[in-house]
Length: 252
Image 1 (cartoon, rainbow, N blue to C red):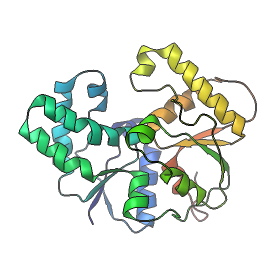
Image 2: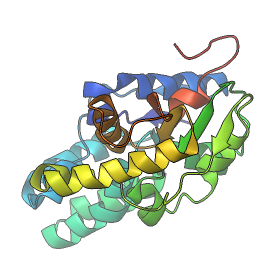
Image 3: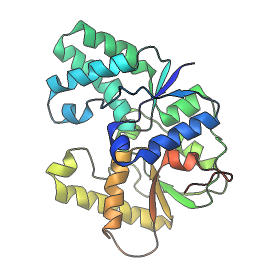
Image 4: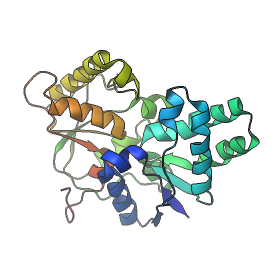
């Protein structure tokens, strides 16, 4: 089984720890992971802002870079949703047989991390140890487009020492929404503040999720003191970082 990591441009630029944790986790589970150096961006920012033609070269690059792999594992639900849900749309609108072939052959092989762990490897207990109270925020793409369902929760529930606190209003958007946060900053901050208020109500010390973009938004608000004071999350972590943590190699 040939497996590649698509780290995503956001993780590569601002949260490499999520990508490193993904590799660390998969290798602990016996998976040999390749990192094709030609990878860049999947094209999601361009597509979401209406630049379809600028998306097409990135789509072609994705097709070339990840050709020949059985699975492409991605620690980002939104990027997986871009490939699986939007690449076919780009191909149809472009009327390009090459793009259609990429959409048809690449999309089924691109998996969000929890999908790969639960559906391909067939594991929920990954041997993790994280003795903290955690609350989980499901991102919109993972929840509504990929329909990850209980996969992330099952993985968290199997972590030794971890107490999972239910997040009120978990299905509500955190307010990031890509360029939505840029074009509608006041609404975005209000939504993020509501999400942090819900997280604080759980008493959890760690807020986790599977999309770095959402986590960056919430972490920024947390660092700037948004929301009511009181007990609540002190750290925002990617799910991969928690699953990669073990008693022998604890999360730093």
